[in-house]
Image (cartoon, rainbow, N blue to C red; front, side, top):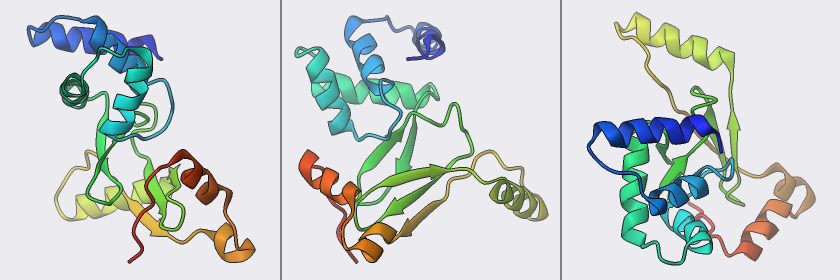
Length: 165
């Protein structure tokens, strides 16, 4: 985990009049231990492996603090479930491609999208602050080869697959 994240959080909680706790530190460590998106329940599972005493409520409150401190971003990847993105600090203008077959999420950046976003917002009298694009697509591997290693891995880990529309 980047020490800058912990320093930014420490500064933020100090300004809010809160105190630093070991449980909060464990949650931050778990949230930024992997470079992938997660739900609150997935984070809770990670945290419980590190500290069995941390409650679900503490995880939810800390997630709110991390979002408010602008260290995590809430994103909508569907299924009426909030997903958290720890990667936007390094890549503030990244977008998401979501496979509706296997649930795989791919982050991508494209300078053409950034330029288009800038042109559209300026033409309409706005200044762009952030963008998020989610593209839902079918898995090429599943279509071409009849099987997808991501789908198999998703099923083996017990992750919930998206409902087909």
